Length: 383
Ligand SMILES: Nc1ncnc2c1ncn2[C@@H]1O[C@H](COP(=O)(O)OP(=O)(O)O)[C@@H](O)[C@H]1O
Ligand SMILES: [Mg+2]
Image (cartoon, rainbow, N blue to C red):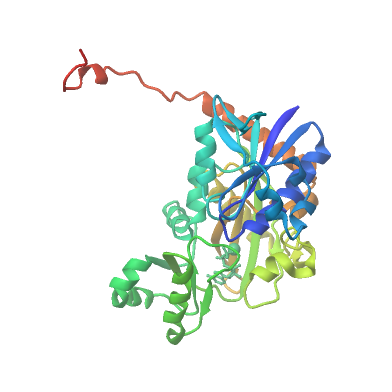
């Protein structure tokens, strides 16, 4: 029996969505698969860690007072000793050694590579993208810069920080004036359309920048794609990639916002499949380009395990642009994998074996190097 820790919650704007992802596709499927001892590890909004099997049920988090219930419990500690062990200290100390971690955190401190860094230090296999790809994908400007360097098409853009906006506003406005309206102004680190404005004229620009800077200290200004078709492509794999169907979310508002993504239809559990076309009904030639660019983007960012690549297509010119990469697709895009023939159970078990495969490959690398530098370095010797 393998012991799996599913880590979710955390200090992120997408805290609540992370609880849903942890349960609906991950814990429920692991339970249905059987053969796993599942430990839910929940990080509160202020960063306290708890682990208790009662949290394997989503119903636990539907109690209005669940935070108060947790406060009465002992917090869990992490011990890094030849892997990861959960420890509940005290007189009746309890320890659980973890075989594989299944991160289920969206946004800051989780999906941004922070958790992956912690798990690398602990030397424990974990599902999904590693630290570097997670950190790059979490920053919309870094993502575009890395993709441009490898010839992947992205919309023309510029980026700047809060400090440079305060110091060099005129210069930045000149830079932005080379971009064609409509523009999109975005905080680089957030998701769920938070702080994003579509700017139709110069008169709206500064206000949109102020809004984005309210949420983030680094922002992106980019050209809007007209006659827009949005598609997304979920991918799994380490070396050999498996592509799900190219999916077209059919949103109703002017651009895809939080409500569309998570609440339409009131079912919860991520994007509502009723609002998606799977597979996307687009030209065969466009479809092929999306698949090729999806693979290239995944490899360029060094993704492994699972990720989802989002595209913006101008349906009039047939130009395709990679918009962003999600290293923990909400709900794992289970609805799409199911239509592509991979059940929830198969998806989570495959992701766990991919985690173990990558971990084993990493252990083959040499991480130490012997040198005589310490004995030869100058300075007084210990007597
Ligand atoms: N350059 C663009 N052109 C047209 N629409 C865009 C552009 N950038 C973003 N959008 C719209 O805004 C939505 C949210 O932007 P996105 O970059 O995907 O951020 P988020 O991380 O919030 O999903 C997109 O799904 C799309 O509908
Ligand atoms: Mg998006």
